Amino acid sequence: MKVLIIGGRRYLGPRLVHALLVRGHEPVLFNRGRSNAPLPVDRPVREIRGDRNRPGDLASVVEEESFDAVVDTQAFGADDTEPVVRTLSGRIGRYLVISSVACYGRLLRVPADETHPYTDDARAFPGGGNDYAVGKRDVEQIVLAAHRESGFPAIIIRPSVSYGYGRLFSVWGYSNRHVDRIRKGRAVIAPDTGEGLIQPVYIDDEAEVIVLALETDGSLGEAFNCAGPVAVPLWQYFRAHADALGLPVEVVEIPAAFLGGFDPMRCTRASENLVFNHAYDVLKLKRVLGFEHRFGLEAGLAATIAFQDQWHLIEPSEADDPDDRLIGAWQTRGNGDPAALGEQARRACGHEPGPIPLTPWAPDHYRPAPHQVRPDGEPRGPRVK
Ligand SMILES: NC(=O)c1ccc[n+]([C@@H]2O[C@H](COP(=O)([O-])OP(=O)(O)OC[C@H]3O[C@@H](n4cnc5c(N)ncnc54)[C@H](OP(=O)(O)O)[C@@H]3O)[C@@H](O)[C@H]2O)c1
Picture 1 (cartoon, rainbow, N blue to C red):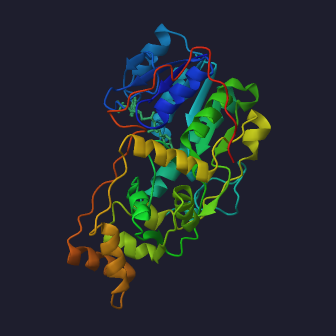
Picture 2 (spheres, helix red, strand yellow):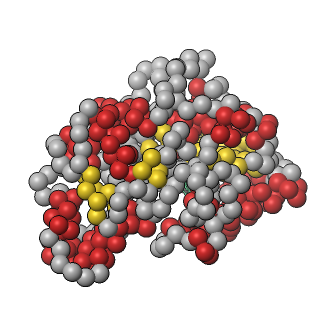
Picture 3 (cartoon, rainbow, N blue to C red):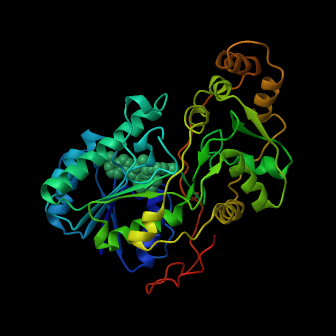
């Protein structure tokens, strides 16, 4: 298949390019040329410049050239989905959109399978995360309506939080400083009791799901949860790092509201999302697509840490890490509202809240190993649970 990827040059995109080439497909990228993460391949990949949200850019591409499939990694709401569906209708064999399990909102039951109701006002996430969840719900409803009404060849993939290669997450957002902290015997932080369930998916497993969904006729008009093989409490996510490193770890529980007060930017996800349960039924991936996970959590974390060590990506921890300031402030707090106490602690220690960088899959200095992707495809290795 010739597959146009809308996006392609930050996190998921480069791993999807690799997965498509391994299976003998031809990826072509469509983006604005602002994000330029390296591609993990040893051959040129064609790239078309354009803005998905500028009228005419995508239309002129699909009018001039035919594609078997489009993978849209950048649909976030109704306004940016309706025009794309109009443009692509009748022109492509498959439109696969990357949604999110966030479309369910706060879960009514776990594990949530694909029949779980969409988010509504009663199950909204607090803060800005709710706009994201509602936006993904709206994207799905538009493409599914187009499928029902006119046979628009929609496929929906709902990833949970993804990780692997250059990206890990902690209570500080996309940060891997906890790896160095575990190595140095320093504690790591979990919000509240750390009992919120998460089900991280290794990014290459996600990429394989996308390729299989494109290849499988039975996926048209269907939505698929795309999460890791098991859901674990957040404290166990950190324990799995420690197991992968062969070290112990101390997990310190700090109220989510205190974290949010201390760093309302970097700790947003910890304070407003990771305290809820995120556990998803992934049996449909096997039933319809024949997919099996290659990476259990510990194996995925071991591979990720090895990659980050190889490319010198682990952020060093220092004696005055924000983690230590936060833990110290929590342990010596006075009485009062936790959010206000967290904010007070931030001011007292001069901690500067900052944005979370959207780390790409690999750093600029990454170079693919020669013959990393062979034209005839790679042998499929053993699957790791
Ligand atoms: N990470 C997670 O844990 C997670 C979980 C659930 C769902 N998701 C979903 O997965 C997707 C994430 O994709 P990604 O960032 O990893 O994808 P990616 O394809 O690796 O990177 C983003 C790409 O989109 C391009 N882009 C952004 N705006 C564009 C526009 N208006 N027109 C054309 N290209 C545009 C960027 O390039 P330019 O800036 O150069 O245009 C970049 O190449 C999102 O839909 C997200 O909601 C992620």
